[in-house]
Image (cartoon, rainbow, N blue to C red):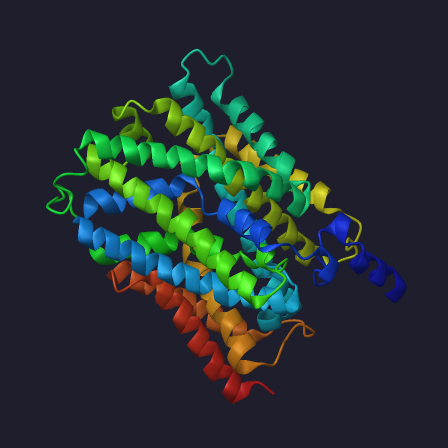
Amino acid sequence: MQTETKKVEQNTDIYESAFAPVPESQRKTLLSLTAVLAGYPIALSNFVIGGAAGVGLTFDKALLALFIGNGILIAIVIITGLMAYETGLSTAFLSRRAFGKNGSSIFSLLLAMSSVTWISLNGDIFSRLIKTTFPWWPISIPITAVIVILIWMQSAIRGYKGLEVVSFIGVPAALIMSLVGVIAAFNATNGFAGLTSYIPEKPMSFTAATASIVGGWVFGATITPDICRFAKSKRDVVIAGLVAFIVGCFGLQLAGALVALATGQGDFTLAMAELGLTGVAFVAAIFCLWTTQDNNIYGASLAIQNVLRETSAKGKVSHMQIAIAVAGVSAVFAALGIYKYILPIIQFLSVLIPPVPGLLTAEYYFVKNSKENITTNWLAMLAWVLGGTTGYISLKTNFFIPPVVGMVAAGVIYTVLSKLFDK
């Protein structure tokens, strides 16, 4: 049995190093790491987030919100990324150190659920964008959504190599399309004249803006260890994390804010249409969605492998098979118009996911007593629930930044409980 397990863990290509640390021979260059990391946050939702902040705040406050929000996200990426580099483990397998075997399986199922939710939602949204942009499009929205997700699947089933190919093409293309939009907005407003004097018609609070920036991408920041485990050095993790999220998150959000301010439209697609750039917006959407959703399929596959590790199915299902299954379920949900029903799911996950980076950080850097060999660490489970509850209260009372509150609370509670009761 031990020999069989060893063979499974050594067969890194079939299982995408799911059961063991990424070997030195498969670590990637800084350029590759940066491109793949950047591909994830280069997403259509970042235009929307930036656009909402742009039209809801004065320009200086919007800029400050973007700086603070992305600073928090980058900190999560680098801290968890360094853990992944040192251990060679994915997000799901890192969670074993805090939660134990069964506890990490619960977290992994939530990761997979969150990924499927976002894949299906974006598949549905993009199929509707196709139908709106090209009224002559002959295929129905549900079938189009299925086709779109199956296309995203093509790079995900090929593992890191597939993500790398799409990122090397999609990241520059998405950035160029975004720059075209910013230049058009610049020209349409005589160099953004009146930018600093802009007064929003429907103001949003600074807290709400910052919370949307962090909340919109805290899930993405949480699963970046899936990519950072391929780093060759700590330096590469720091540089790749900084560049990827400054360009992908902050850069696209700033572009969304500028275009929104120039047109008065918080919706990126409508704003680009007003600038006469519908085609540019559509091309940008293609690459933004592909480089993000293939990462979601990839991450969900790794999370499910973590669940299977404690069952008789360990080593019997390849990365490709699980990735196909994840894409298939997402395609079915998208075809059924899941976007109408998943808002409560998204809100639920937005409360439960943020505390986890706090728990992982507390265990790895402060408690330093890995629980990967025990069944369930109930101290971590309790800290997780309390951290999520604290974040939810923060959300309902509009206090500070709810994801950060939940993250810090979970980390502090876990550290204190561990110091008192962890034997």
